[in-house]
Length: 341
Image 1 (cartoon, rainbow, N blue to C red):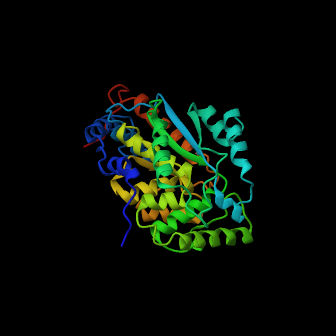
Image 2: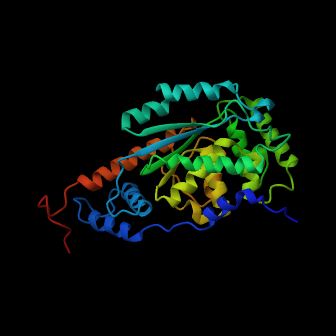
Image 3: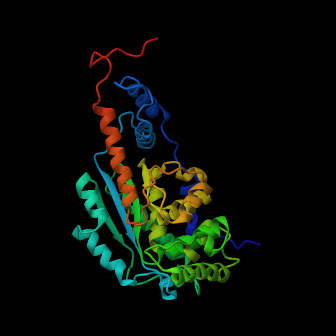
């Protein structure tokens, strides 16, 4: 018989269960203007859909991107003690410094395209429990970290991109997917930061041992998150939840960030309707996870960097799409003949 879920999650469950609908009247207004622009109907394909996405989830017939934000959630993982990463755990903090100093890929993308960048450090000096031996987080800490992630929207962004940094977190994400969707470690792990064949086998073995260690305690998505997840994944879940309730559309990055959305989806599939999945990662398990949620990626660029890079590039496309929608001439203003009937 499943064990009862810890009452610490009561507020989280309520927020996931009762989610605001999108604004279809705003979408209708966007489509009406789009039909007047000097182009064949539908000719901008997914760019048109991006503007509709913004309108639906901002609840604005004239959507805007005055404050698009890329958020990176950084956490450390005890499972790195199992030799699952090509890099030491210290690299997480070193890369956080690199983000803020402007030296990382995501820093440069954001600077070039005028995207705000915020980095949330999550107790980097205190790695989660090694999931092969103990729970990653206790339930109260997991719930508190979800709540902390909700603060990501305090700056009132009109679009939020969800990314992460954490040595070892592709192993953790693989464990979450295996617990949610079935299969073994080998079905879900990839090379992450570039492990060799032996490292790949250690990752698969670590996932299998974690699943066996917590067997019987993985009967609810939030329990799965606490036993097998990480602080950055819990915080990303919080950001996704808060964004839905504050009318902020979300763009999800890659393999690890998608794991946070997968937890929300497993509780209530409707809870991620305001999320766009930026790209499909070079990690093979990412496509499988997207398919399990019935999601289609916007881009396929072979990325496996994390740190929000794919989500930021999707935001660049969204900015471009909105600029076209707002600034193209209409058939009337350009004195261009409309479609013959």
